Image (cartoon, rainbow, N blue to C red):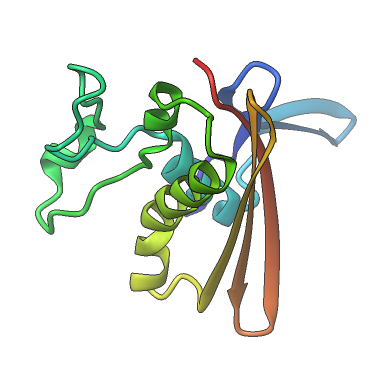
Length: 154
């Protein structure tokens, strides 16, 4: 069964379902798009807030995803990219490295579950308020590229 396709809106910084429209026997039909499971997987892992480590003290709320409470294997869903909202953008190189680490941590399960063979990540600050996240996922000879412009301020 295919997943509902999710799309990330860079302008509003929101995720929504994607719909498809087709004509069947002369009737226009709109349905939920179920294409590109891999992109949906990446979006869920990057833009769902993972619970902060116990050492996190920048905010009282450590965020977290409700589904983690039901994970018997101890895996966590999501990323800690949200923590970047609470860190000043004073050292570009350090900020990009931290973002890359958060993305790698969020996508690691895809490697562990053999969904792909390799994940290449590049995080680049394009301004003090925007971070470009580029992900290339390789499975065999197939490669898919994903790019998201993420706001560094909430």
